[in-house]
Image (tube, rainbow, N blue to C red; front, side, top):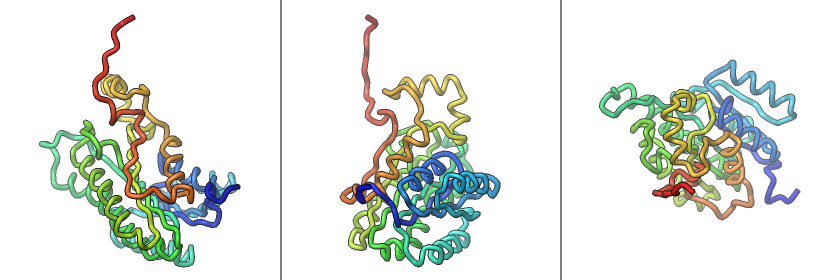
Length: 262
């Protein structure tokens, strides 16, 4: 295989990798030959996934971690450093959560929950991973953001502001850490067929209205996000950094179109 299209010999940490988009990302990275460590808050889901990956012959290990906890983040990175001999090629900040409410109904706990889970965890893990990514000589950080951080979406203002902050963090780190051989990009999915999206996609009216704004007319699949994440981590993407790339079926570029009946 062309080395530009291989992750053979490279190491990766994927947060929240037991289900959904994270699970698909692990499969994609492993398929390109990467050794991966996955953390997740659910021991049951993590163990199920690890068993599945072992049967497929993937090099994946895992540990329980609540990334909203600073001490648990520090423990996670110490373990990753030991496991991968002080070097890490890929960090995928995938963990994210949402509480959908009108802005006037959010309370203090809602704000701190979104900030600690979605943006503080990604910020701190990036800090902690910096020496490992630098030591690898070829480092890549990918933030799993959302189209809600690019355009206005009816999925909660606090969630959206954390994703907008994530996109800006990717830009800052791309410029600040380029000298250390580290690239940083943000991937912003539309609604994807996952457990987290089901409450809204299960609402027929919401789904119809949403799909009418998506040129491709549907929600995305986890593997459609994972393929872009893997590409951004490959040597062939070595000149791409600081970007926010939407995986959205065209939602964010859709202005107004009118197609009269034939």
